Amino acid sequence: MTALIGAWSTMKIPMVLFELQSLGPAFASIRYGLSLAGIFWIAWAVERLLGPRGRHKLREPFSENENFPS
Image (cartoon, rainbow, N blue to C red; front, side, top):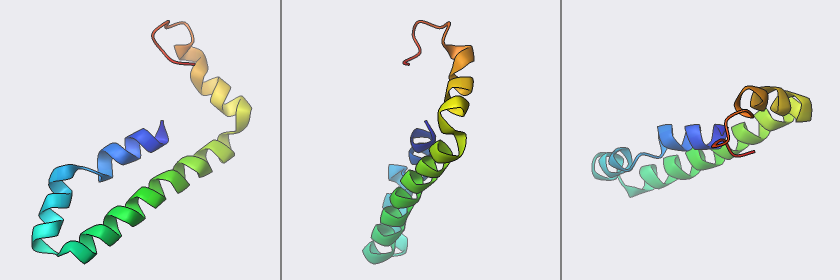
């Protein structure tokens, strides 16, 4: 979930197009690559910090909803 939120907020196509035009392809590529790596690093860190019990506790309120993936 953290990876999805991070990807949504930093990997927007209009932002990349703006950066390509105004700051150049080198900057846009580096920022895009570092942002992508950062998203996965943060998702990994949150998963490690929560542990199995924390993840289960976060999913409990949604377990009653049949449309929520488990």
